[in-house]
Length: 378
Image 1: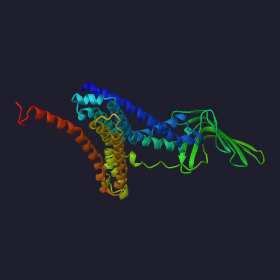
Image 2: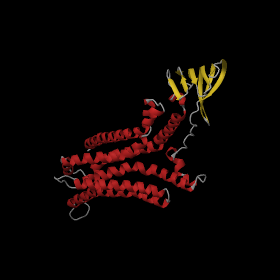
Image 3: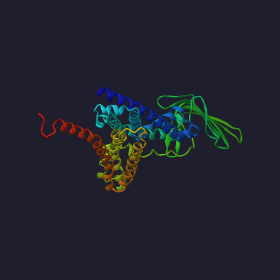
Image 4: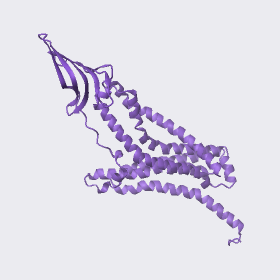
C-alpha cells in the first residue's frame, strides 16, 4: 500500500504542477498587460516590470492552487478508473478511504503552504509592490534618468547623467533649461540626488556651475555653486498608498473587532479577512475530497464517469460561489460568518463519511462472516 500511495502522489503532484503553472502563466500574461504602459510612459526597465508582475503571483497562487489540485485529482483518479486500476485495487480489498489518503496528504501539504503564503508571503509581496509602484511614480532618479542618455522631462528641460551610485546619488550631471522664454541656462554638477517635495521632485546639485544667456540682449553670465536645487516641474508627488487589509498581520485582523479606532465597517472587513486566512487555505482539502470521493465510491462504467465528474464539478462551483457570497455578506453582517465555516465543514464531513462508510461496512460484513452468530469470535 505504501508503494501504491507513492505512485498516486507522484501522479497527482505532476498533474498539479502542470495545471497550476499553466494557469499562473496565463494570469501572469493577462496581468502584465496592465503594466505595459509603464515601460513606454515611465521608462521602467524590463527587470522592474517583471518584478512588479511577479509580486502579484502569491495572491493568485492561493486562488489557483485549490482549483489546480481539484483538476489534477479528478484527472488522475478518472484515468485510473478508466484503465481499471482502481477496479483491481478495490478487488484486492483496498477501500476508498485508503485510496483517498494520497490525495488528502497532498491537500494537507497545500493547506499548510497556503496558510504560510496568505499570512506571510502575500503581506510581504503586497507591501513590496506598493513600495515599488510608489517609486515608479515618483522616484525619477532611478527610473527616468538613465545613465549616458539625454532625458527630456519636459519639452524645454533636458537632463543628462553619467552614472548612478549605490546610495541613490547621480554623478556627472548636465541640465539644459529653456523653460524661461527669455533665458537659456545650462547647469553642470559633479553629483546630486533627487528629493521628493509636496510640489514634486527636485534635484539637489553639489559642486557645479550655472551658465545663462539672456535671449533678448545675448548677455552671458556664469556662477559657481556648492549646492543648488532645480525644480523639475513635474506632477505633484503622490502619497504612498495606505496599507491594505492584505498587508495586515493575522493577529491584527482577527482582533479587529476590539480596535475601536476603526469605523465599524472597517472592523468587520478586517475581521472577515482574518477569518478568510483560515477558511481559504482549507479549500484545498475540500476540493481534494470532492474530486476523489465521487470517483472512488462509484462503480466502474464502460461509458465513462461523465455524470460523476459533472456532479463533482458542480459541487466545487457551488462551494466556491458560497465562499465568495458568504465572505461579502459577512463583511456587512457578521451573522453570515457561520456560513463561511459551514461551507468548509459540511463538505468535508460528507465526503469523509462517504469514503469511510464502505470500509466500515465491509469490515462489519467480514466480522459477521467470521462469526455468523453475531457473538465474539474466539
